[in-house]
Length: 344
Image (cartoon, rainbow, N blue to C red; front, side, top):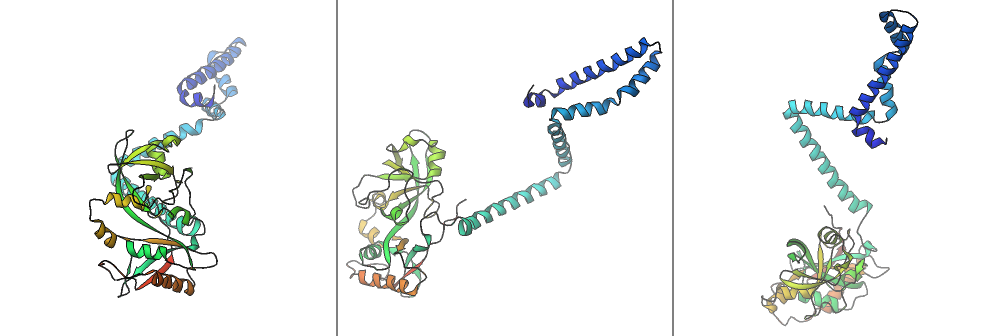
């Protein structure tokens, strides 16, 4: 009989144990009766020779190797009875444990992301945030025109610049009900800039930011696992994002959440199609977006000359405004080390 049967068939084994102990005891009594002693004397001599019945039972139970399971079950039942009698104490204890576990999990996530694991990108010390400052010195994201100027400018410090916009979206398909996701619209060069590639499928093409391209999407590893049961055949299939048919071209690693707990990614050109009902001229001038950049090897965001080079690049790229802008052009451009995204 295996260990599992010894646990679940405890009562049958207890009956067999009692029957076996009773058989040996009665056999010993019979031996003394055969010697001509009285029945009471035979039982007394048999009990003295046989030993304590309860001690023998405990020794047999220990030999099974499952006694600790039954002891643990008895302790649980006893604790449950005590907690049911003291309901106020039980409520306080449960709330205290829940709060402690939640705080500990949050602190570990922060420490793991900041100190232990770091950003899930190659050379994170060379990836910086790019922001503009107005005439009053207040930081703000770059407008679309400013981003195009900076991206088209010549810079000795910056290897490349990418922008992103985070928007909620509704994902639908024929397999499961609709789901609200965190969608990030990124430049076509964003993943190559931070040295990240899909582990399934392909990245966005270099011309993915151009208007008129077919709608494509990269799924996050978590969304791919929970919604599509980690189906490798999802690549090439069609899904619907905010009512638009979209082709799945790849799946990103599960720990990749750039820039802010994103579940899926689309090129920036898809954002323009999403806003097609809005005046494109107004969108072009008013749509502001955060930007990241990678500095060339040998440069560092902590070097003053890197920041100066970023500002000079913005100044060289700036061209006269042909349309009216709510914000003035670059007062200056700041580069700061990219902060890691803390996930739940």
